[in-house]
Amino acid sequence: MRRKNTQSLAEVLSEVLKDQQLEGKLNERTAIRLWPEVVGKAMAEHTDNLYFKYSVLHVHVKSAIIRNELMLIRPLLIKRLNERIGSPVVKNVILH
Image 1 (tube, rainbow, N blue to C red):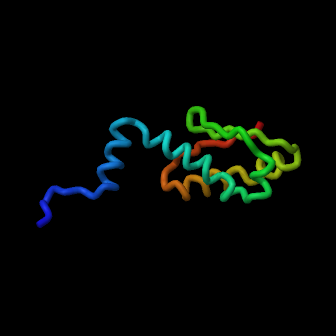
Image 2: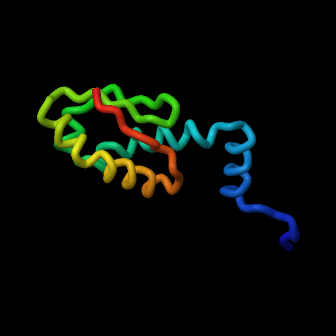
Image 3: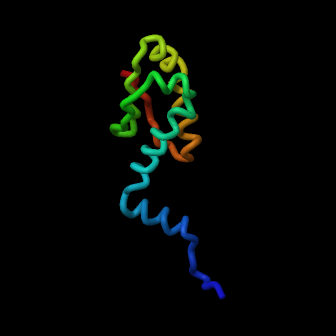
């Protein structure tokens, strides 16, 4: 018999992550992991050293041509990353 106040494991984990203020860091790591899927494999091969600082994703780009193309689609990248994560984690993308 199930108790009335039981929670699913997903609900409990979500609460623990929020209480420990780890949810944001976990979402940032998820955004970095999703980067190749969002920009495409060919573009991702020209980027490295992805990291977050104050909700801004910093990306080192190896090619000026790729950097320009990514700058043109930056709003779309932010939108796609946030949609995939389900939370507004990425506020901006800085291309170095």
